[in-house]
Length: 355
Image (cartoon, rainbow, N blue to C red; front, top):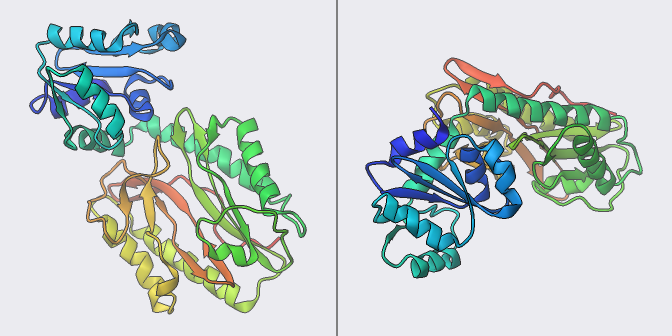
């Protein structure tokens, strides 16, 4: 069953049609990347209205709905709404802007615009469970990132700047199969590693410092995500101690992740380890987040998330300890929730690497 048909099954007793305009969701349902286009899904049939720039490509690439060349979009939408006797249109409440909503209301005044979270929630539910094909794309993205990590270890040296290392990672991934990078690559060194999402700068790496790298690749629309903290030279005692605590916390969560556990329960497993060593206040973010066509998806492994993690969810396990003005450590793997455990997509070593 196609993704469009699965969505129609979830919403067909709640609305007359679903209007999808966000780039990510349109790509998810149509299988084609574009910066524009309107997907409208009725119980009986679905249509992709798309402009001249993408029309030829869509005709050959999109198989699960009728492709229509965009001319006068609102007249075309109204024609289809009348054809299918639709009165209610559900929109993506989580992605549609207030301006866009006002335009649709002014142009389609004879129709009720459903702005509840019904459609967005149904899409989130579908996207949260990854198919085997999706998992393979995520693994391919991760392989690219891990190859970049293996290579960058030969380039991290005293005197290199954070920006230089970030540029190397990005360049490697883009040259070796990545459609894009997953997010703005984070490379931090020394005291800057205490900033969980710091921005790479011109700071040069010094001997005896941690270098924290958080990065990922996109392959055919799907993201990877990993973090590794390495040391240039020999770490001092507290650095090594903190690294091993974070590693212990990560291993505890990796061994406990499986279908049926709640997101907050998984978070607590790692958090309890870190708190037992007295560093609870230094772990200020959640343990992890889902990953797919976007780098942050739902559900999460967070104190606030009581969602049950089901088989097929891809999620990160990334505990960290950050000591202001000293250093920070984060170790991040990610993989798929399975009935009896966790399929870790991350193959890079997570022991402390000293360069």
